[in-house]
Amino acid sequence: MTKRARIIYNPTSGRELFRKHLPEALEKLERAGYETSAHATTGEGDATNAARIAVERGFDVVIAAGGDGTLNEVVNGLAGHAHRPKFGVIPMGTTNDFARALHIPRDIQGAVDVITAGETIPVDVGRMNDRYFINIAGGGRLTELTYEVPSKLKTMLGQLAYYLKGIEMLPSIKPTDVTIEYDGHLFEGESLLFLIGLTNSVGGFEKLAPDSSVNDGLFTLIILKKTNLAEFIRIAGLALRGEHLNDPHVIYTKAKRIKVSSNHQMLINLDGELGGEIPADFENLYRHLDVFAPIEKLRPQDRIY
Ligand SMILES: Nc1ncnc2c1ncn2[C@@H]1O[C@H](COP(=O)(O)OP(=O)(O)OP(=O)(O)O)[C@@H](O)[C@H]1O
Image (cartoon, rainbow, N blue to C red; front, top):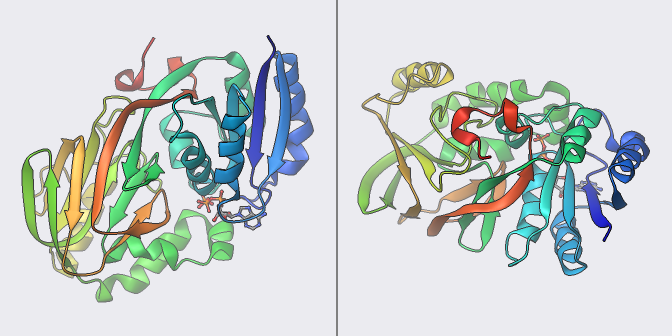
């Protein structure tokens, strides 16, 4: 039977609008034997709905074309079902952490070629309460920066926009008193931020979780304890080089199940968007989604044949 592929694309993502390249992408998929169709998202939540409908209609493949925000929305429409279509990615955002981690080319036709080649790898998916994520969850004042960078500035300046905002905000960043339980261990104290990562690529920092694997069933948990400004800047410098793992201000570990609570309010960022607030219960869903990726380019710890 002919396989069916659904492209869900965000017409507003990135600098290079996907719409222009859509006919060529559809043609390539048709030539590879797929019966294809496409859906342009209309606004918040629409990609999740479209993905859910694609599952209900029995599509074999669902392809998300957009930034990490669109990918997250599509995964939220796929992950709750028992039978999940294979997931294709056409990166159109500014950061594209997920595509970066899976070595999916950042040019449109190159990304389509990865899908038509047909190789997939199973990838872990994170669940926070009733929401899903594929790159990272984070909490703490510092992670809230992502909500404050205007999207126009982001499109124009890419990653630089976050750094500019970060520098502006640094003096006002305050730690929060939190309780973090992770696989039987406990952290109680003041923390500037915590990150729960599935991939090694976080906000374009590719060395933040250097030993992570996308399909080992474990999160990388990074807790940054209370520091002063000078220490913070020093640790940020270390993190750029992947040298923060043994710093006394940092807890760096692996866990499958993580619970975060506090007496204070704390917003949780999921894949770069506001995803809810604590108390939060995180679970790593082992190899939950099959994703098209160029297997020979993956890091050895991510490869599964
Ligand atoms: N037609 C539309 N018009 C305006 N906004 C839309 C439309 N469709 C989807 N969106 C919004 O776009 C956002 C996702 O954008 P995108 O896919 O570019 O991710 P992103 O995380 O912003 O990417 P990046 O930060 O890497 O550039 C979602 O918040 C969604 O609500």
